[in-house]
Length: 178
Image: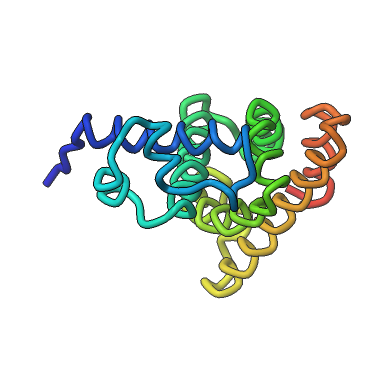
């Protein structure tokens, strides 16, 4: 059974996500209200609550969209496991304004939580190097990889992306022995 997507609902969700991102460039996350998000998106609160439960849920939706975009990129370009770190840093370099907003608002940790989910979803793309691990070992490995990638990305952002994506990918391949 296929699920039909309501284009109006999807547009409303996008407008709410865009509104929060615009507001985050103007003021701190903790100062933004749902009313302001709705006003910026030119939607009523009822529409907001039809799609989201809180500001936090919008941020998770934005992060999920970024990861889905990255997933599509690596899938469509047939990126091999050893090319993944370069694709990762090039992708996030294009979204550094968003990452810096998360850092400034002490929200960067949200990425780590979603990394674990997406590493599991991408297991078939990343490769079978660790196929012999038990399920619990794979779970711990994903947790470790997610935290490592998250920490490296944060350090790179804080340093102003001085190193090139190529240099970051080279170091990551060494660190994770991919």
